[in-house]
Amino acid sequence: MALTEEFREVLTLKNSPGPFISLFMPLSSSLHDVSADRTQLNSLITKAKRELTHNYTASDWSLYAREFDKFEHDPLGNADARGLVIYVGPTGSRSFKVARSLPSKVSISDKPEILPLIAARELNFSYDILLLGRDMFRLARVVDNKPELVKLPDDAPQTLQDALGSELGSRGHWQRSTGGDNGGTQYSGTGSLDTAENADRRNFFMIVDEYLFKNFSNQDHRSLILVTDAKNQGNFRKLSQNTYLNKDVQIAQVANLKEPMTDLQTLATKITGQLEKAEMETFEHKYEQAAGSKRTATDLGALMEAAVAGQIEMLFVRSGASFPGRISDQLQIDTTSVLSRDNNVYNDLAMLSLSHGGQVHVLPSEQMPIAGNAAAILRSTVTNS
Image 1 (tube, rainbow, N blue to C red):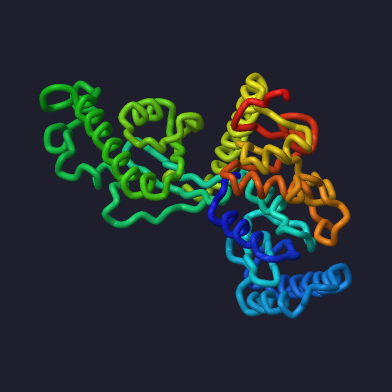
Image 2 (cartoon, rainbow, N blue to C red):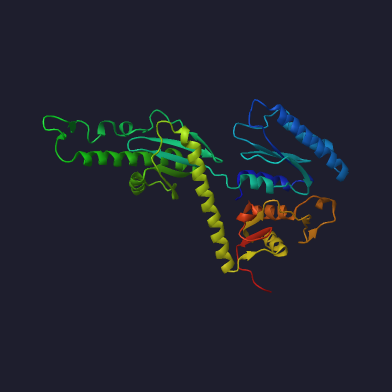
């Protein structure tokens, strides 16, 4: 996970005085049943108050209560959200809705607990799907693995007829009939009917490619996944000038253009699985390359030093990994101060890595590049002193 705008907001928040309350909760699947969500939130806030006033006696709860009041009337979720993350400090707060359900949890620590948020964002893909036929297309959008059909404007070249209109090469020049006195198929005109139809299809594909690049890909910077039969996969890709057309994921099957929504979720699941596999292979390959050039670290001391120096290019943390304490200004693990209570050193590593422009990935054990709680790809070679 790179430094997106939402993580930049959390990093800005962490520079404020603490301690911070990190609150995680699942959301109801129905927007019409929000009372349970509101009850759950109130219960978690009560728990946070109890822990803060007991463990951090110097903290003023009224400052936190003022921040929590901001969420009293706002909708907790939306149609796509299945989880809610709230960070509250004495001088500010941030909230994030996520597409994955989250276990209910409250923690109070020196810094906002961002590892669960990163894990909830991990391997959530957003991309466009081009459902392409011989003479028409449909466009779908997938956001955080959830697909929906895009309603295109009336002037979109959704069919060959829409795209070419009077420029159809075969219009008015060819007639075809089956049967007659001698049976079989008869043509009138000159040249090849198939040649004219192929030219029309080529022009249609070029218009579709240009339209999608101009109005979608180049504006939203989303990967475009092509779904069409094997022949048109090759033909469209030969013509395409769209730099966002995904080269690695190719779904060679006849696209359902009449009732696309009936297949869309199955299709999105298939594509997302391929994207996830490709990303895991990329992580593994990058780590192996870095290890070969001595640009990796797994020891906690080496990881802390690299994180503080801004040398972590990519940090991998095992989901659920925890090491009590906080990284002090003296590059030591503080386990005795009040601020170190319930703080997670791996969380500090993640924040430092992101603040220096590195990437952080929270992965289950089986997807970690090595066995262990954390590993990093470094920006420069490790030298033995």
